[in-house]
Amino acid sequence: MNQNTAQRLQQIQARIEAACRHCQRDPDQIRLLAVSKGQPLAALATMAALGQQAFGENYVDEALDKISALRSHTLEWHYIGPVQSNKTRAIAEHFDWVQSVDRIKIVRRLADQRPADRPPLNLLIQVNLDGEQQKAGCQPDQIADLAEAISANRPLRLRGLMAIPAPRDNRQDQRAAFERLHSLFARLQDDHASVDTLSAGMSADLEAAIMAGSTMVRIGTDLFGPRPSAASQAPPRHAGA
Image (cartoon, rainbow, N blue to C red; front, side, top):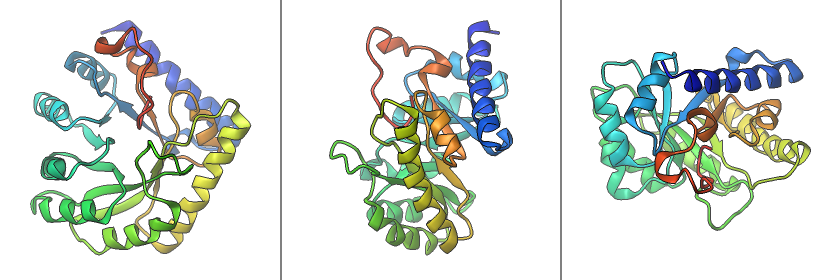
């Protein structure tokens, strides 16, 4: 067993537990998504052996190889990258969750292409919380229409929201952004009984996200270490870091 991997997992779990103590939440309410894009298969297998079950991938072709190779494990696969129309069939067929839905066109394609013998595909609506042009995600005033479109399609299940707020330098500002997101989440919960997941918080801001009500944090480099292909580069800020 890779001791460094075990130590990193324990460190992230300790941070989650400390944040929960600070705001009097139950750590069992927080799910850890291991963002495994760019990581070798062996690293995922090691993490799975340590008990991690949920993995997030950004690139469809890379993910399909991993899903196939790790089929003997009981794992949950989350697609967290921008959803391209020409990739929806593969996503619908092989993933358990899609966290990055931001257009009704994508909702319809995923519904049409989800195999009938698979459980409903769990969807999170990605929100562009700060109106950043370089980021995917719908505008807050588009959430309701997207939620209705998802709920109207039986092969899909609306589970909640995901967002990547703009970077902020201090925890108070981070928490304020996540609290705005949580307000949108609470409104969605009021309208849809299936909503139970707020995917928010990464390596730099998971504490603020948990204090503001996140139920899932997405951790990549702090969990696995630097990606082999980008060890000398600063990691990009995608849906997990």
